[in-house]
Image (cartoon, rainbow over all chains, first blue to last red; front, top):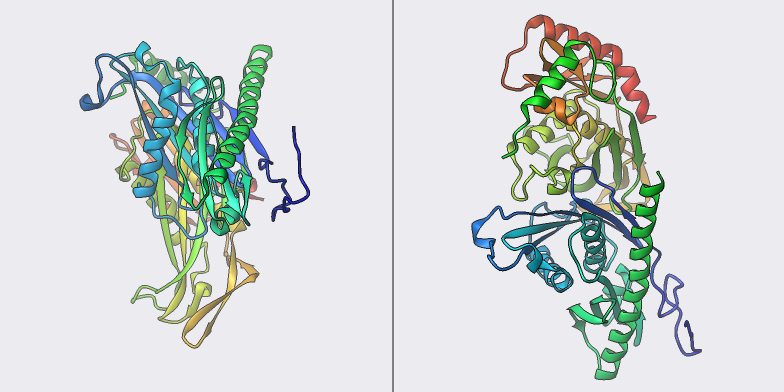
Length: 238
Length: 262
């Protein structure tokens, strides 16, 4: 249900406070990987790919009782306004880590002990909210790779802009806004697997933001499932 | 470590010996080329080139910087390549491999030596401020012949790249983002890569053909037909005749390859 009350202000790009940016998901876009997905959320263009489950290439990652997941989040040098130097930095290392943490609870890692799943997320164009879009893409790529999972996680951020809580901040809103709350959930249970907050919120605002973000994640989840269905139906027919 | 099965080697070699290829092409035939430009809103120039299943994205980010002391009136080209792990199970994350550096340098050499970009027009104030063009090659899918695919992507990205007008006010460079000009170009340059399999030279190698190659030759040729860059690779030597015939073939194919940029 979409309900826009009179006191809600219009956003710069004309969206309602609880409206996502246009989102598009494609499945199986790369040739050499086990699974891949391409996601566009607003101006974000993100590729995610999966190898595995496969042999653990580094002994120290190996776990005899369960499988492991490794995530690498990387931004293309030309994805942002002023060129980003290639290679990992502190920000992308952190995002890689929390992305792995966001995906792990949905994976049945114990069904493939001693092996690993590698996830590569590549931000081709960035426009705010790349970490959530990255997780969304990675989850679809994992499904495409056929990795055993109990849910397909979905991500979306809420935030505060002009003293109101809004969904899915664009880059401008993120820069000028007062808070950003990226959230990833497991849609079947509604459990949260990624949560960050930066900015200033009262406890009521925080609650509102979380609830709004979860609504957003559910919308994203529908698009993910639709994309996967379309891909495999097409493959069956074609 | 990935090992090419002996059966693949024998199959590819015997096909080539009979003037055939695994995908049904002639020995001197390119795969289908698709180019899309202006795909990245934040890059001043960008393009994706698909050569069969191979996909390469090129993005150009210009910035104002200092010229090199020995060329105070010329702009600067910086070419960089990332072989992303998603492109190929054999590509590993981490600092650029020697393969990725070779790819960036071969593409760079074609552009630089052909004088494709009018570097003198990228000078804002001699000795102080020039445009530096960062050319980033992002390889996202490797199904063979990254060289030619990357070269086409970079050519297409340069062709669509727009620079804001720059002028010097009180020793500071002021950019006019409203008014942009295209990058001044002389011409385009095509790269044609051959691999030697058995006794034959094969144009536009597929992944399997690259795996069994004994030698590789890339030839860069400008629109006007002048040879501007070359790179020999692979473990085995090439004869003079093989090189001459490949260059002749590359010359005859040049217009066809460059027509994809229009």
